[in-house]
Image 1 (cartoon, rainbow, N blue to C red):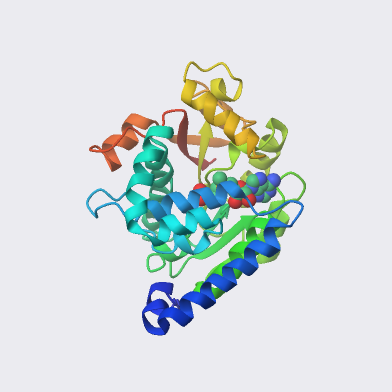
Image 2 (cartoon, helix red, strand yellow; image 1 turned 45 degrees about the horizontal axis):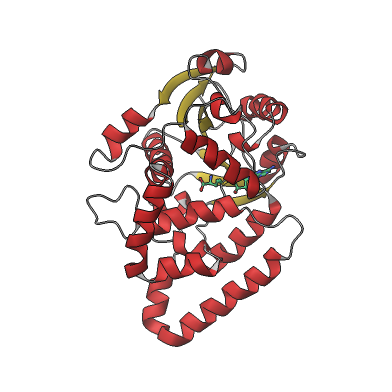
Length: 323
Ligand SMILES: C[S@@+](CC[C@H](N)C(=O)[O-])C[C@H]1O[C@@H](n2cnc3c(N)ncnc32)[C@H](O)[C@@H]1O
């Protein structure tokens, strides 16, 4: 699968200059008009994640946690687009986010970087397929497109979010090995939909599920883990992040975490599910997954950004293996 055609927008802008910019703005306005009027519009949190990765691009190279030149293409809100277009706005914005949500920029960019590293590492060892559950506006398929050229990538997400993604990817050039699978986790059987799209249980697999579990009910989480288990064979790797249970239950002493939980609820995407690190291994074992790693903020900080703020410590990242 070498047909990785990429029409990067910056190049377009350099060539077509003002005309291309105007066309690009008009295309985005069309998307806004279409999707903000939908009853269940695209995921605002997916857009926030893209905005965070776009902001990260203004960090000096040695401090940058992730290189994602595509993130800004997924920004719809005018305020986000301004931030991504004007570097002089990005730095104060980054500082403001750092004060408003300490460690959020670090954790949310590390999450994508770690996913890239797990995928790229497995790709050197025969990985055949990746399912990105709740992929949102993530661009792993392009960020590490070279490493994943022989891997089939399946992005699973809500149809409303995915409609926006497809439109943008169509414009900037989606890799040929990328497939979109539209699913509502609360209602649909995503395994069936993945199978129909070509995700085969016998192939070496990685399932990545970042930024999603806390939005599910406990029942939906149970159902999802049972389903994920059936996706691949023994040895299938599965990475996801989880919120601390004490935050979801409102019992945390971390006031920043509780404040962010309230904001998520106000945005219409409340945090519903969390786990306790002391029992996460047992929780996963009940679904026949063996815990390989449970990353906390300290470890992520030391590994990815020792000279920056501590990543937020109420979300953790788990890597496990199907037994
Ligand atoms: C916070 S975003 C994470 C996006 C991406 N993984 C990232 O880290 O940038 C959460 C994603 O979960 C998806 N999602 C939330 N609830 C869902 C549901 N019931 N069915 C399908 N997707 C859902 C949203 O559409 C959104 O793309």
